[in-house]
Each structure stands twice: as structure tokens, then as C-alpha cells.
Image (cartoon, rainbow, N blue to C red; front, top):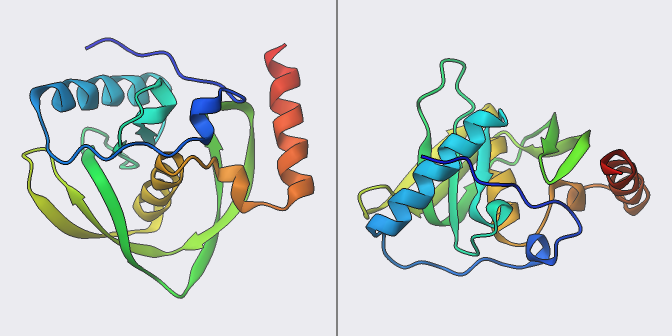
Length: 165
């Protein structure tokens, strides 16, 4: 499958909420496969459809060390999160050349439509949880920098835009 181009901030689609898909189709599976190829080429731990200009609530995550364990999610919804948090470094190909420490819950319980079209519920922990929450943020029109102070966010965006030229 082809690697799709990544949108870069300030593309307005990155600030828009994606549309629910309702059911998984062959087209959905093709988009997921393209997303996995794109994620692997970056390389990254996850990708949300809006990052490639597809305004549907689709995401893939795979922070596994061995790779090849991508979870495909359609219409994901957070059901519960851990009261405990951990700070981890996050980045996005939409904001090249920058990263930041972000505090997120150490686990997240998510309901989503899986690759065969069944709504499932799954608990994700550690880096899997970070990646899932990061992708859901993208589906809601938020970059990870939205979780930072205004000053830090503006500094990182400015630095990223300058690095792009």
C-alpha cells in the first residue's frame, strides 16, 4: 500500500473534528492499511486519519518493540482513564522537529469498532495508552501541544514552522 503524505500545521483540517464512520468497509480497510504503511515509514507509534487528510474517525496504533501489532480503530471513545498519570515525551509528524513532555493517564479503557466491524472494549497501558490518547486527540482536532501551557505551545509551533522553512 502507498505511503500517504502527512499534513503539517497550520493546515486547518488538523484543528477539525473527524466524522464518525459507523461501519467498517473495504475502503476503511484500505485507508487503515495505508495509514499503517505511512506510520511505519515515519516511523511512528500511531496515526490518525486526519493527519493524512482523511476526515474520518480512524486511527492505528503500534508502539510495540517488534512492530506488526497495529490495532485498527474506528470511532474510538474513551470510557475510563487511570487517575494516575505519567509524563512521556510526545511528538507528531504534523509539527516536525519538536517534541514535549506531556502528562497522560497510565491506562485508558476505549470502546472502538475493530478491523472486522465489531465494537470492542479494550484497556491500553503505558505507551499503548499514550498513543491511543494522542490519536484520539487528533480525531478531536487537537495536537499534543494543546496539553501544554500557551507559552510552551506557541514556542513549539513557532520553532516547527521555522524548521520547515
